[in-house]
Length: 210
Image (cartoon, rainbow, N blue to C red; front, side, top):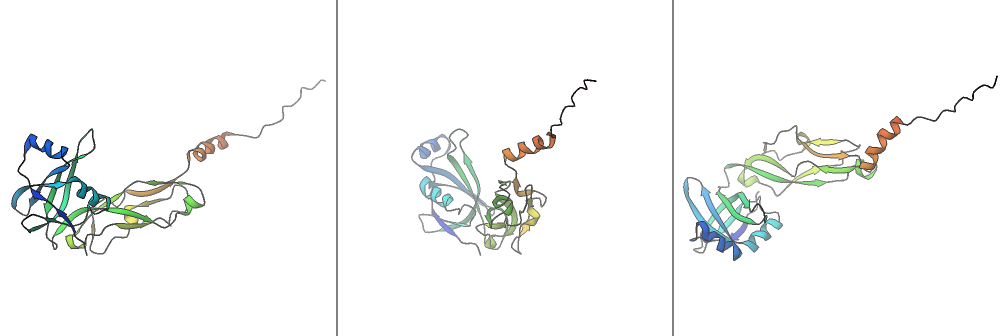
């Protein structure tokens, strides 16, 4: 069952170029849309939203609390960042009901220990950080566990099809995509061709003096 987190927001009267002043004051412009209702302009303080993201709650169902004590249940659809600063400049929230089907990206959590890393001293390469799935909004989980103990040798790889999903999930990401792989270190990779080309030195026959 999805756990809701609460986030306080207020209606936004500033639009257009005025949003720049909000951002300087530590406030992020945002909108709520969806469910065939009119889009609603709101604003949220940057610090509480940053704490929400740091707590890995950005994929959860969020209860937006308005000053009139009403609540809107939403998912984050898009977080826009400045191309130079990397700071959040706008958030798009989408209204959602707990029983509707939604498409979301769930973070991956790698568990276990890979023998290819521990024993063969390989390097773990994370190829994907999230999986896109379709599920009921009430079934959204915080993360999906990926067991890496099956990575036994250098060049071992786990694909999306190897990840165990909750029974109610439908996979959207291609099952053929790689999730995590173990590669050789640069030193090992460089040593292999060198060893292959090296041959034992042969004694040069001495010229016959006869």
